[in-house]
Length: 91
Image (cartoon, rainbow, N blue to C red; front, side, top):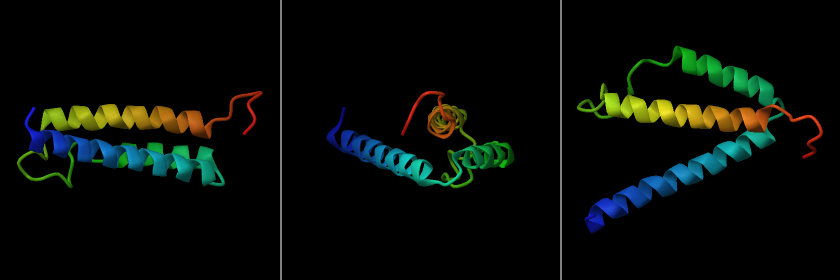
Protein backbone atom coordinates (compact mmCIF):
# COMPACT_ATOMS: atom_id res chain seq x y z
CA UNK A 1 0.00 0.00 0.00
CA UNK A 2 1.30 3.43 -0.88
CA UNK A 3 2.27 5.64 2.05
CA UNK A 4 -0.24 8.38 1.13
CA UNK A 5 -3.07 5.83 0.86
CA UNK A 6 -2.11 4.29 4.19
CA UNK A 7 -2.00 7.74 5.82
CA UNK A 8 -5.44 8.63 4.41
CA UNK A 9 -6.93 5.34 5.64
CA UNK A 10 -5.36 5.75 9.07
CA UNK A 11 -6.72 9.29 9.28
CA UNK A 12 -10.24 8.11 8.42
CA UNK A 13 -10.02 5.20 10.85
CA UNK A 14 -8.84 7.51 13.62
CA UNK A 15 -11.70 9.92 12.95
CA UNK A 16 -14.19 7.06 12.97
CA UNK A 17 -12.80 5.75 16.25
CA UNK A 18 -13.07 9.16 17.93
CA UNK A 19 -16.60 9.67 16.56
CA UNK A 20 -17.65 6.30 17.98
CA UNK A 21 -16.19 7.20 21.38
CA UNK A 22 -17.99 10.55 21.30
CA UNK A 23 -21.28 8.88 20.40
CA UNK A 24 -20.83 6.35 23.19
CA UNK A 25 -20.18 9.15 25.67
CA UNK A 26 -23.25 11.01 24.40
CA UNK A 27 -25.47 7.95 24.81
CA UNK A 28 -24.16 7.20 28.29
CA UNK A 29 -24.75 10.80 29.37
CA UNK A 30 -28.17 11.08 27.74
CA UNK A 31 -31.00 11.20 30.30
CA UNK A 32 -33.24 8.92 28.22
CA UNK A 33 -31.21 6.48 26.09
CA UNK A 34 -34.37 4.61 25.06
CA UNK A 35 -35.80 7.81 23.58
CA UNK A 36 -32.48 8.47 21.86
CA UNK A 37 -32.72 5.02 20.26
CA UNK A 38 -36.26 5.77 19.07
CA UNK A 39 -35.16 9.08 17.54
CA UNK A 40 -32.19 7.34 15.86
CA UNK A 41 -34.53 4.81 14.26
CA UNK A 42 -36.82 7.61 13.04
CA UNK A 43 -33.87 9.48 11.53
CA UNK A 44 -32.83 6.29 9.72
CA UNK A 45 -36.34 5.85 8.32
CA UNK A 46 -36.27 9.40 6.96
CA UNK A 47 -32.77 9.28 5.49
CA UNK A 48 -32.44 9.35 1.70
CA UNK A 49 -31.35 6.23 -0.22
CA UNK A 50 -28.08 7.96 -1.17
CA UNK A 51 -25.37 9.87 0.71
CA UNK A 52 -26.17 13.55 0.12
CA UNK A 53 -22.96 14.92 1.66
CA UNK A 54 -20.70 12.72 -0.46
CA UNK A 55 -19.06 14.14 -3.57
CA UNK A 56 -21.33 13.98 -6.62
CA UNK A 57 -19.27 11.28 -8.34
CA UNK A 58 -19.85 8.77 -5.48
CA UNK A 59 -23.10 10.04 -3.99
CA UNK A 60 -25.10 7.19 -5.56
CA UNK A 61 -22.33 4.57 -5.27
CA UNK A 62 -23.62 1.13 -4.30
CA UNK A 63 -20.36 0.44 -2.46
CA UNK A 64 -20.75 3.64 -0.42
CA UNK A 65 -24.37 2.72 0.38
CA UNK A 66 -23.29 -0.76 1.48
CA UNK A 67 -20.60 0.69 3.74
CA UNK A 68 -23.04 3.21 5.22
CA UNK A 69 -25.61 0.45 5.78
CA UNK A 70 -23.03 -1.74 7.52
CA UNK A 71 -21.86 1.12 9.73
CA UNK A 72 -25.46 2.06 10.53
CA UNK A 73 -26.23 -1.51 11.58
CA UNK A 74 -23.09 -1.63 13.75
CA UNK A 75 -23.90 1.68 15.42
CA UNK A 76 -27.54 0.70 15.96
CA UNK A 77 -26.42 -2.50 17.67
CA UNK A 78 -24.04 -0.51 19.89
CA UNK A 79 -26.78 1.99 20.67
CA UNK A 80 -29.16 -0.81 21.62
CA UNK A 81 -26.53 -2.29 23.95
CA UNK A 82 -25.96 1.10 25.57
CA UNK A 83 -29.61 2.18 25.66
CA UNK A 84 -31.44 -0.97 26.66
CA UNK A 85 -30.67 -1.98 30.22
CA UNK A 86 -29.82 -5.62 30.85
CA UNK A 87 -31.63 -7.01 33.90
CA UNK A 88 -29.15 -7.46 36.73
CA UNK A 89 -26.54 -5.17 35.17
CA UNK A 90 -25.59 -2.15 37.20
CA UNK A 91 -23.78 0.87 35.82
